[in-house]
Length: 130
Image (tube, rainbow, N blue to C red; front, top):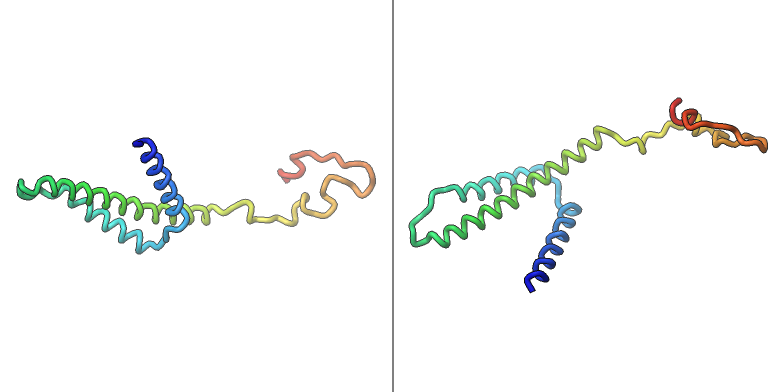
């Protein structure tokens, strides 16, 4: 029974990560807020303890706040990581977008076959390294 529950938990965790990658907003203000909230919630874990009669409840609350703070910090970092990746891709450019229509291989009749019946010998270096 425990194995089945663990598999279901892993399945729903992976579904949540897929949702996060596709639908999570990438607003920098949201990222800053999440990082700040995560830092505040996590810092509660390191505060000195209260009275001994509340020690068990306080320990559970501290770990819960630490967990929530870590989740907020990870989500905030994810916002900025995704924005960085997109910025990097835009800066690098893509070879698929750039078309050089004046190159030899894009001129009509440059497909390796002459207007007659005999094939034209062409090498790989003729096409790609002009």
